[in-house]
Each structure stands twice: as C-alpha cells, then as structure tokens.
Amino acid sequence: MITTATPLTLDARASGAWARRFARTTPGLVVLIAVAVATLCIVAGVVCAAALNGRIAEQKAVLDHSEPFAYAAQNLYAASSAADAAAATAFLSGGNQTPLMRARYQQALASAASALADATAGAPDAETRKALAEVSAQLATYTGLVEAARANNAQGFPIGSAYLREASSSMQTKLLPGAEKVYAADLARVEQAQRRVGSLPMIGLALLVVALAAIAIGSVVMFKRTNRRFNLGLLGAAVVVAVVMVWIVGAVRLAAGDIERGRTEGTARFGQLAEARILAQQARTDETLQLITRGDITTSEKSFYGHIEELAARIGTASPEAAAAVDKWVASHRIQVDAYRAGDYPAAVAQALGTDPGASGAQFGAVETSLRDAIERARATMRDHVSDAGGYLLWLPTGVLVLMTVAAVATVVGLWPRLKEFL
Image 1 (cartoon, rainbow, N blue to C red):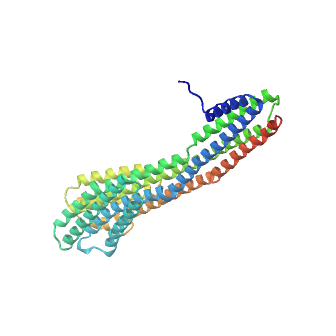
Image 2 (image 1 turned 45 degrees about the vertical axis):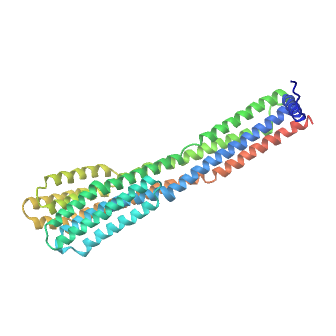
C-alpha cells in the first residue's frame, strides 16, 4: 500500500524546513536571540517576583498569625501555671482567704481561658486543635478539683489538701505538658517562617543567571555575524539583569540580617524567658505546697531548688532585674524554711504569704513582674526586626518585574536595527 501525505502535512513539513533554513540565516539568528533573551528575562522576572511576594506574605503572616498564636500559647502555658501557684497560695490562707488572693487565682484562670480561646482560634492544623482540646478538658478537671479543695478547706476538712495535691499533680503532669507541647511547636513554626523570609529565591536567581548567559551567547553570535563588538540593547539588558541580581541578593541579605537579630534577640530570648516564667511559678507552687502538706519537706525542697537552678540558668543575662529578684526570693524562702523547721508554722505561713517586701510572696511577685516585662520586651524586639525586614522587601517584587521587562524591551529594541538591515 502506498500512502500519500495530505496537503496539511506537506504544508507543516515545508514550514518546518523553511523555519530551520531561516534560523541558520543572520536575520533568523537575530530573531531567535531576541525571542530567547526577552522570554528568559520575562520568565525570570515573574519567577523572582512571585518568590519575593511569597517572602513578603510569609513576613506578614509571622506578624499577623504565627507570632500572635505562639504568644497566646505561651500565655496559656504561663497562666495555667500561675493559676496553680495562686490556688496553692489561696488555699494556704485557709478560711481567711483574702479577696486579693481569690482574685489572683480567678484572674490567672481567666487569662488561661482567654489564651486557650486565642490559641484555638489560630490553631494551624488538626493535631494542634486536638492538643488544645485535651488542654481544655484538663483545665476543666483542674478547676473542679480546686473548687472541691477550697470548699473542704473552708469547712476545716483535712481532705481539702488531698484535693489540692491532686489538682496540682494534674496540672504538672497533664495540663502543663500539653500546653508546653503546643507552645514549643508554635515557637518552632515562627522560627521556620523567619528563616524562609530571609532565604534567597534560588530558582529565580538561577533563571537570572541563565538570562545573563543567554545575553552573553547572543552578544558573541551577533559579533561573529555582524562584526559589531557591542549591541547596545543586549549590553543594556545585561546591565539591568546584573542590577536586579545585586538588588535581590542585597535586599534579601539585609532582610535576613534583621530576621537573624529578631531570632536571637527576640524569638530565642522570648522562649528562654517564657520557660523561666513557668519555672518560677512551679517553684512557687513547691514553696506553698510544702506548707499545705505539713510533713517532711525534703522532697519539696529538692524540687524547689531544682526549679530555682533551672530558672537561674534560663534567665542568664537576659534580665538582670529578674536574676536579682530570684536571689532575694531564695533568701526569703530560707527564712520561711527555718521557721517551719523550728516548729513556728504561723511564722512560716506569714513569711510565705506576707505582703511586706521581705516576704516570699512579695519577692515572687517581683520575679514574676520582671520576667513578664522582659518577655514583652523580647516580643517587641522580635516584631520590630521582622517588620524592618519587610521594609527591605516591600518594593522588590514590583521593581524586579519592571526592570526585567525593561531588559526584555531593551533586547528587542537593540536588535531591531540589525534585523531591519536584512529586510
């Protein structure tokens, strides 16, 4: 059987052959260089602009979503622990619980509930929402046990202390670890987002290098075919592409510098101080529970000083005020323990709950205030640096797209006179 080609097939073959012959001619090469370079410039500009827009969106997401969510998770962690410390302090006052002590517990509980609502609203995935649901259930169980302890304590029933110990145990072994898990994951997400903001758009830069190489190859071909050393259009396009590369690398590196300072002076310090705040509250719980149990305090003292040691290590040089307050608190705690071991229980309770500057309660309050203020400063520092990083990137996507369009136009305009010579 003999097959014959259709007219359409013959036309396609003829067109292909003509295109191949035309591409080998000088005007064909001029057109090919113009199309290739202009296309590469536009594609590289679009890819770079898209990547840089992604970094700007990531920077805004850190300020609007990731960081506030991590802050809410930290508040949930801290407020829950603060509620435990406040509940133990209020219980220690017995039936003479003052309105201020009750208010501190209720305020800590309200803060924990508010932070839980904020954290749940901003939860980024199902796993986080599940963890927060478990924290919510544990918080409800904890408040029930505390209320049972308070009711029994007000009536003078000894079982009240057992309820409080159970509540504190639930807080330390279930609620706080769950809140810490959420908080640690959120802080890690913030750090990852910060790293992405300060990373170079490698694919876009690679395309810019390819565009620059295409311009160089085109210039060599034009020199060989036209015997002209330089083509102003290609030269201008090369300069524009080089400027774009320098601009991108410089702006992203400056942004990365701010991001890194935000991480070291803000995010890392924020996490460090948040952990210190929790340790302080856990030490305060140890301090009051040892008076509530009214037994051998060897274990509770070991736990107290273990938390204090970790607390001092976390604070380091991040907050000199908090470090000095911890030293004063430990000194007041020793007075409390000396009174307890001497058999003067009322004096030990007075030292634990007293409002005078030398009492443990006042010294713990000074530690808590110092750490809270330091946390707020670290958070503000981090947000300021992330915001500054966004300033370096703000006009970069638009500028890159405009300049790469200029490079494409310069290529076409520069090669057009050479093409007209053959028309």
